[in-house]
Image (cartoon, rainbow, N blue to C red; front, side, top):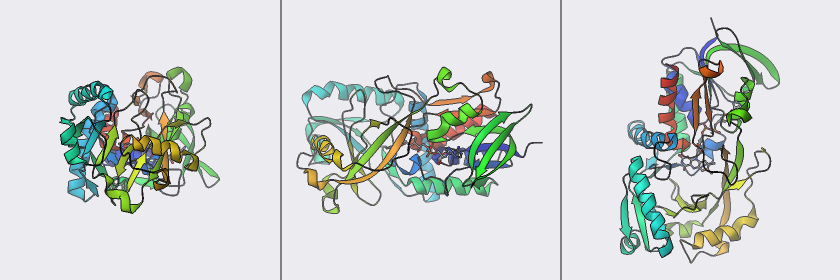
Amino acid sequence: MADAACTVIGGGVVGLAIAAELSARYSPLILTERNQKYGQETSSRNSEVIHAGIYYPPGSLKAGLCVEGREILYSLCARHEIPYRKITKVITATTASELNDLEEIYARGRENGAPLEMLTRDQVQSLEPQIVSVGGVFSPTTGIISAHGLMDYFAGAARQAGATIQTRCTVVGISRRTADYEILIDEGGTRSTFTSERVINAAGLEADTIAAYAGIDVDGEGYRLVYSKGCYFALPPRMSGSVTRLVYPVPTKHSLGVHAVVDLGGRLKFGPDATYLSSRSLDYRVPEEKRHQFAESVRRILPFIQDDDLTPDMCGIRPKLQREGEPPRDFIIREESEKGLPGFVNLIGIESPGLTASPAIARLVARLIS
Ligand SMILES: Cc1cc2nc3c(=O)[nH]c(=O)nc-3n(C[C@H](O)[C@H](O)[C@H](O)COP(=O)(O)OP(=O)(O)OC[C@H]3O[C@@H](n4cnc5c(N)ncnc54)[C@H](O)[C@@H]3O)c2cc1C
């Protein structure tokens, strides 16, 4: 018999949600996380927005799992005291030429299952008097959530159902045996192995590396990740009342655009931008030199913002399947029996809206291995 019925690799919000979902069904369940604590990478370096599901192509995993995840999150937050606010969101067209795109966003969002309302310029202005607008879309179901609060909840639920969360435990190899997997781990320089009947790869920025350990040709399968850094700049507390909800510009083909993000403490920041990285190093510095470029983007929405009002804040790194200049890619969430890896599930390219979708992703994984 294998040492574990199920192993989840990666203690971000997705791995933790999966551990919470599966731990009552598969025992022993082990979650391995390479850092000192869970949730130290992308899951704690994001906008903490509960997305409504507006922008993604209808029928995609991103659209379906975002809408389903949003509803589960609101219900979890209400029942388990996870800090959140249904703060709502406005997408504002700042020139008449953007109004057609706004209509398209409205239609696509509605098709995905996001309740939306078209707003006239006056209606936008009565919601957000300081922003530039010729018309907008209102999203009443967009909210903000404490990502740490959510991860603590998932970790607690998983442990309560008997799961072990093993931190400082890096997976460095996987081999398929007749009826299970042998997993090679490194704990502070000491290597050992254990066996597991099922393996769920939720390793975020290293999900392609883990797939390669299992023998998958990541380039041939289109699983190779590239990194895209997203930085934020913050406004001082005296200016945090400039908007009272999340405010987004009309997105371009390549990006959602730098937008106004309000956090649960009432701080107002702008971001994230998007810069592809040439290497896979986790460099979390926010370059000062971006200040002017940021201020220019922010002035599209709030014209009175000066460069000096902005201070470098935090950043996160997206695990992207989409290379620069290529069309967007959907999440990969696949049980790999066809590749001779039964009970092995890969989750690759779980960028935004991965936080929102996390509980729905966990349910999908449960169905894939049942
Ligand atoms: C700038 C930015 C803004 C975003 N904003 C939002 C938002 O507002 N709303 C939203 O819904 N989504 C947002 N997202 C997306 C969201 O943050 C991610 O989709 C989500 O956090 C992914 O979670 P994860 O568990 O897959 O990955 P991670 O949080 O990266 O977790 C993966 C874990 O695996 C561990 N790991 C890696 N390799 C190994 C190994 N070999 N052995 C053991 N452990 C390993 C890592 O240490 C890490 O803890 C944003 C992302 C970014 C970058």
